[in-house]
Image (cartoon, rainbow, N blue to C red):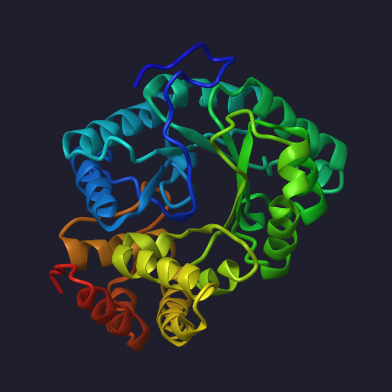
Length: 346
């Protein structure tokens, strides 16, 4: 991919469209904790075969534990792996949140140079005591990043990783209107009401006419941060999810999205969507409590690779790991995923 200057949209970009995205774990070599780029390539290709698009260096990818050069290496390796397997049109999103506006902009520049297609930016939380109730400063942060980023920007609203800062729907819609280079939002706050309000606002035909995106072929995506309300999201004009569960069950996650979208037009499909939504919601609730180390443990068991997080994050306790694997919600998910044709080790 050829990138243009850092103050413009790249000449060629893979557009983000509704669907399922996975925040990909960053895999490390045991002991040295160097990047395991070969395993990363294997995993993003596995996801792409199921129809899942990757998000690199997000929370699940331990973005906070990565140096500038490492993020770029991950992007290049993922792009090379996807292209080598014929997935030339699969876009890559990169987490580029930094502690300051300046560093965030630099991360965005580096992502563009490395070959990414979009970036996702979390609200800086270190000085939450000042920023949490300072709407003008929060808006200024995203406006400046969006104006200076060569790539489309998604807002990442995750209070749990932003010292409790929770952007409300009014501010997010305001940013969508003010910033043509902001292309969507990930709501890991888990608020279905917030998703509903934002999706309703941006779905209004008047919004698109009055506030077109910088890239006319890209809309504004409203994405959940979990797999447990994909069906609900479809019925309020949401656009899918960026969910860690898609690392474990990519085929089931994509199938749920497809069924949910179809059910909005054909009510006879809704019961099956609701059934599958229940399976994913239960598994998401259980696996999310085991965090990054739990997801890596499950990929190790199911696909043959995973490993541990970078220190100081600990690996999952062996007893907790076995309980997680044998939990009825997880076993139900594994059975469901295998039913869609995925070849799993366990």
